[in-house]
Image (cartoon, rainbow, N blue to C red; front, top):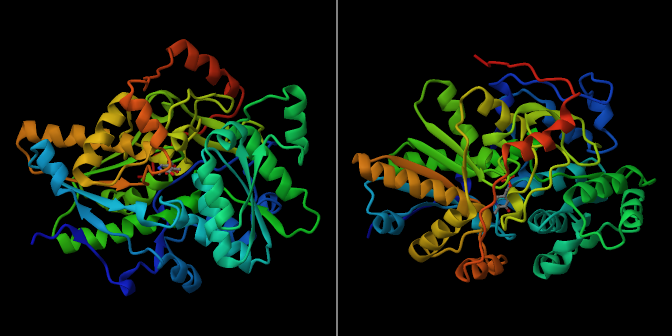
Length: 458
Ligand SMILES: *Cc1c(COP(=O)(O)O)cnc(C)c1O
């Protein structure tokens, strides 16, 4: 029997994360006064042990035993050779994927939710606040908090709260408290409701509410948590790529091409960064973050300083940005509807280490259905964007008659996103694209901010 799954033993789980900040140079995040943000300024928002990770340039960081113990509920995750997809495409390429759908929440997000909950717990924090759009992050954090006996409060964008009941049910099952945003519990929420009592809400407002709820809690025992974008989130996700490296070695192959979908950048970075380390040291690899054409941050926006949230609570981050007030079109891949991108991913794109791609929704779902019918797992709408790029590269390898090795990240399953598949089957999936003028208008918002330096790490 051919070997489809490459499984690591429990004791082969990586014991350290890889920190890309040891190998690249970055523009610093800037505070409201235009100066680099000091760790102390972030202390009301995050616990100091996570802030230390956020700014660390130590290449390898130990994963605490208590974190490994929870991750071992589903990790090491399988590496799978996609034989059926190869056959369906008639390609000589060897296609492999990391299966991140096997976590309790069904995506890669618990890889960072678990260590974040742990570090908050050991710092003496009792309650974590966060925001969620479609609910993937809120459910992952609720799961993680349940493992460490922490309270979890999730501000969920009103329209998703009403339209997507099942991730709310998952949060409840894990003991998380999910409320629709805007709410009357915060000043930011009350103001938003005063402006428009029937507002559908937005991620920007929900972030403002979650941060406000954390910093105004007088007990001092509440902090805020973010599920993507920040350096420590990318760090925690590198367990994906570190496992994949060991597994590719067992398979006796090394990837020519690495692909992941990119919203805030975390599942992509998690798979890619350990291989970027090799690329920095001379390996030849093509590495592609893939985003929706309707939210074209890396492929059409400039590399600038901008805020991570609409309410401008966050420091200015050096990243590709469509503007902090950009309202993305209603693409079904909720996890890819973000105006910015992880500063680390942005820096590497800016240096030419990574080559960003974009695909329309129609092509993404065509690939998603093809892959569901060959490999079996129904992909999350976010993952289908990576799949469209995988299919394209596999067909290119066929045309060129090359036995390329392609590795991609299967970031999550789509079992709670079946309405999007129904829309696709009914012919109701739209492709979105902004005109240059529309993008220029939304990018005016950072015109007066400082500009990041064009740093080359080597
Ligand atoms: C949240 C999510 C994403 C996008 O977030 P990143 O930080 O870019 O990884 C992608 N896929 C799935 C399944 C998600 O839940």
